Image (cartoon, rainbow, N blue to C red; front, side):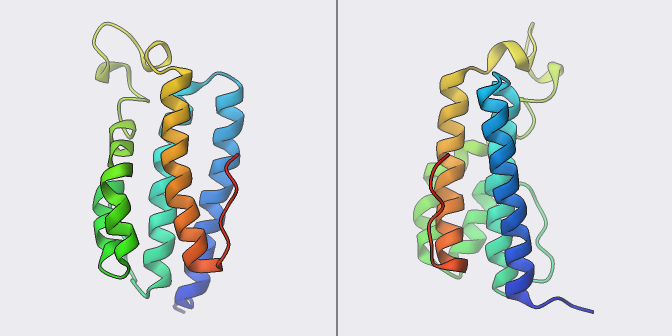
Length: 141
């Protein structure tokens, strides 16, 4: 049985919010590479939440930039946000795999400032989606 689009969107949004709490713990614990990766995941899931809530039945892909462009077809605020949050796509692979960082590992490369900026961008997406689906912004953590 197909879920109600709004209910499916809210389900994805709830997971994005839970991931945001996990990212806060990673950030506070100094796992900056993982906080950066989870920031990308938060934005991806939030954008998918919006798209599912619009009635999309199959939302695939991992690119925040592409998902923002897709969401922009429904609401121009997403298109306006796209360029600002597109850098999150750069955290999808390199934050996790040693072979994506020459002569080092992600745990040594990503720092507090990078993670803070990644989480700021994720919060921008999360706030927008939360406002669109629930009418209230999520306070930054």
